[in-house]
Length: 326
Ligand code: TXA
Ligand code: MG
Image (cartoon, rainbow, N blue to C red; front, top):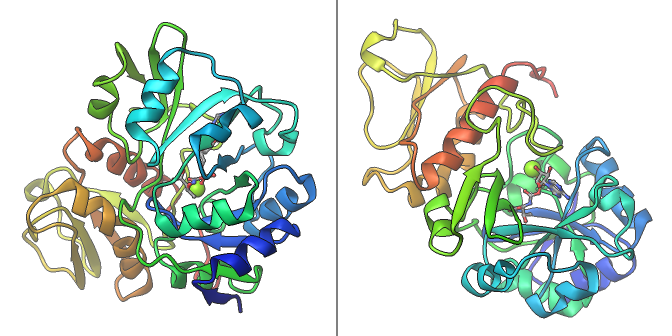
């Protein structure tokens, strides 16, 4: 089992010598390694069973470190950085040569983010290196939002978990590409909403495929993702839905009609911020408990609801395919 700790010095030292450290951020837990060391980065892919075509996000302690790993390709980048960093926004920037191919899957851009979680920032400062970190789950599975979630899935594959408590935002960062004219393309909706981005950019669009069942917008954005073991079905209209026996429910604010073996109400006050913070943990509880099928209602398609619907749709696509013993 991994050691769960709050000792950032110990974890920073582990990172510096090429080890893997899972750490809490405000979005989800990340599985970190020295981004400049290809062998350390290779350990991330092995620990997660992650295919190498899926690029990693590089985490920095401070925006002023960006020029050490990437170029700034748009006059809008400093404004975005000023407004949203530290925070749940990943910027795709032209990478410098020091970033190994494995980090970007050979792509010309590198995803960069400065997280907001104080312990993550302390870790990054103490380590003094850029840290590549995907979400700390097995590839394709539900993202972790507590140290125990990481322990449950990866505890026998890594040494250290830096315990940052429950993740406040609860869903991953928004992945954004911006061109010189300020046209932003969201490759993954996340903790920074489209409405937030529109306050800074003249034009923001969701990458093709994010709203329909189409090909991946970004290499790692496979439609099959965040998958529970149980089949998950999205129910838009409960009244038109036939009764399913042995079902569990995942809803925003109020229990629907029908009998459920278990139900998770994400936010009794309908707050999408609260719903996002609870989403992955609730999905895990429903998957681990009794019942055969998860019925989930879609979220309103604005604000964080866009990112939540994206996660739900991918979870539904990959659900029910993992053996119960896995
Ligand atoms: O909130 C987050 O972003 C978390 C925490 C740990 O920071 N990290 C995270 O990493 O969610 P991961 O690896 O699970 O998801 C990264 C996403 C993938 O969809 C990947 O394809 C995309 O970012 N991405 C990373 N680098 C990219 C690049 N160079 N070009 C296109 N997409 C990229
Ligand atoms: Mg992930």
